[in-house]
Amino acid sequence: MQNTTNLPSIGFGTYPIPEGEAIINATTWAIETGFRLIDTANSYDNEVGIGIAIKNCIENGIVTRDELFVTSKVPDWKQGYDSTIKCCKESLKKSGLDYFDLYLIHSPYRQNENWQKSVIDTYRALETLYREGLVKRIGVSNFGLKHLEFLLSEAQIKPEFNQLELHPQHQQREVVKYCQEHNIGLIGWGTLNQGRIYKNHIIQELAAKYGVTPADIAIKWSLQKGYIPLVGSKNKKHIEENYHSYVITMVISAADISLLDSLDGGEFSNGHHEGIQPIKMVPANSIIKEYNPATYTRIYKLFGLLPILKEKKLHWNKTKWFIFGIPVLKIIKKDY
Ligand SMILES: NC(=O)c1ccc[n+]([C@@H]2O[C@H](COP(=O)([O-])OP(=O)(O)OC[C@H]3O[C@@H](n4cnc5c(N)ncnc54)[C@H](OP(=O)(O)O)[C@@H]3O)[C@@H](O)[C@H]2O)c1
Image 1 (cartoon, rainbow, N blue to C red):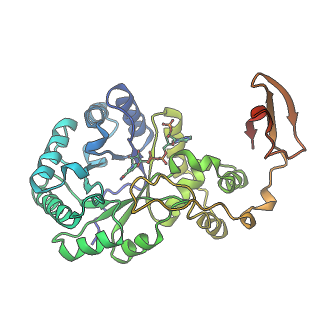
Image 2 (spheres, protein in one colour):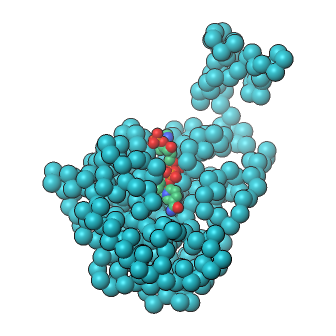
């Protein structure tokens, strides 16, 4: 049975924020703003700064250790029983923490032909760390169906979570269904599709319809699906906006959730998958006519220098003029 005690509903992602001032500031802002789940990994190389930020926030009375939920992960190249124990202990030492709230196998080591042995040796180490109290929960990340089926047949302690790339353009429905059927919690990474959501016109149009930002739409989609979305940012304003997305009461209607669901198969990070998948174009019939913004303001730039034209009525959204291959008229801004 999944332990839901002290389980935050949204998490702060710390990749690829580098060690030092950047990660100390970002983590501090995240905790001050309200984030309680901090997601890191041995491979992110920022555990020292995260530890400093956590220590400062505790000392300043902003939060207690019990209120925080810190996740770390063992990377592929440290898989194996002894090396995983060592890796976790090193990460704890670097971050100055006594325990991690969740410890994950970062990925099933797809490049390794003998991944089953590597995964089970690593998982045995996670079980030991759990029994010793160095980690409060254990789980996996980027595990597909075959990896989970294998793991569940071998595990002595069931994995509590699978952390996966999850957003409207990459929904991994088969593995999500499997996790839900087996009571394995889902933590979503790439909630904003690493910024790609801002280029998607359906997400833009839904944001306009609800009077919110594209980030609000993506974060709410994830929350309404029952996932724990991770959102990464090194920018204070974005961190505050993202937490606000969690707090606002806006609910996406079932019809609009279906519309977002129709984006599945779009462009995605492709960071941890079995193979490269084709990018599906957004189907033309899924354009929401009623939100077609009549308020476009497009600023055009001639030779990259002169803002000469503001056009509110003409829809020249595919216009790019070229002379001998040189673009002379280029869209530089599109305001909705
Ligand atoms: N398990 C895994 O294999 C795995 C893989 C990747 C990531 N993760 C975890 O998941 C977390 C989230 O995933 P992610 O960082 O890959 O992708 P993400 O959260 O979808 O996107 C992060 C990007 O969005 C930008 N951003 C964030 N908030 C914004 C806002 N309100 N407005 C505009 N831009 C905004 C950030 O830039 P700024 O910094 O400029 O705000 C950053 O470039 C990571 O930080 C990491 O902890 C896990």
